[in-house]
Length: 415
Ligand SMILES: Cc1cc2nc3c(=O)[nH]c(=O)nc-3n(C[C@H](O)[C@H](O)[C@H](O)COP(=O)(O)OP(=O)(O)OC[C@H]3O[C@@H](n4cnc5c(N)ncnc54)[C@H](O)[C@@H]3O)c2cc1C
Image 1 (spheres, protein in one colour):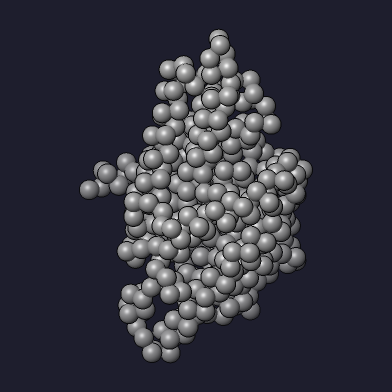
Image 2: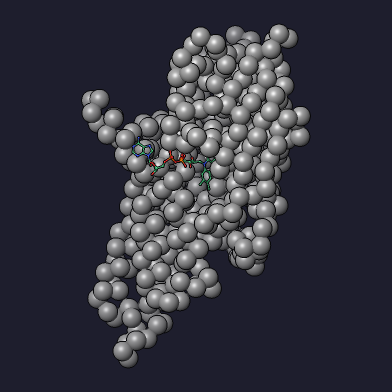
């Protein structure tokens, strides 16, 4: 893939019109007025038939899971079939990336809220859940009918998510579990209807670092589960972030994702990291495209020393470097779409390299956009300061820059 197709561009233009009508007029409320993003996102999802697309994929996945369970087809044969609904997997990804890129030009937080809920939450349930769990939570999460959180980070465990994890699941005599622990920085935490809670099995006598990692699906309102109010943060205001506290939350085996302790692996969470990292390229592309467009416009209009500042070579250099960044990010996005179209998945190392580059590039470009705008760039009205604050999160969540570097180096050194 070297460019967007006619169909992609048509969808992009429709999404742009939706954003201009529904999001731009509400942007101050979303960014500074504590307006949760979910109603506008739901409207976008239904307007563009994204819910129907998700339902088509959902029905297909359930039919496939049932066929495997009944022995009609083998897991091997099922894996060879495309999962889209008459379109290739690459098209599904492209149609997901286009709204992400366009939304990131205005509200990267909305992409985070949506991506964590429908993407991380939805794919955790659909890839690892039992058929019953997929039917119980999957479709509602995939269509944002229900808001979902994916909770691994704790006050004492971030980058070392598994090693320092304190949250526990203790087996009970009736075959269920008692869950305890606290999670922090959880996207959608304050509003989540469904929570994917990752913890360690309380196994007396087993070294904590070797204990099983278990994942549970919780519903808001369960006894012993408290969801905090939104935390105050630097940027990304259209994505509510919160803490979760669990005290003796009683769950049955029906809430253990996959239905069995033996089906749980650390690599399950690692697959999620790969997916999360790839989405950051699309987010960065949206931020960079917008910064470049705003900077070009401003550089042509702003006159100093009797000339538009666009005539100064130092400003031209900044604009040229922004274009280099835009082209590189665009190519990364196309590579990701093409990889999916071929039914492949990027290695964790490649996804890490892409995320590292994309996140840093988005921050660098947004900071240069502020510089081109001078004092106006520091003002809220010109929007580039918000994009810079929002871009910074890309270097922290989904694994910090330093953790991406570790992952890349580890892969290189293992060859
Ligand atoms: C807005 C926001 C939304 C988030 N959403 C979610 C969510 O939905 N779900 C969820 O589970 N989590 C979420 N997180 C948490 C996020 O994934 C973590 O903040 C991130 O992984 C970093 O962990 P930490 O904050 O504990 O930093 P730490 O791990 O304490 O790191 C501090 C510093 O030390 C560096 N460092 C750590 N280890 C190493 C090492 N081995 N080598 C070199 N340097 C190292 C880090 O790179 C960083 O610079 C979110 C965070 C934010 C801010």
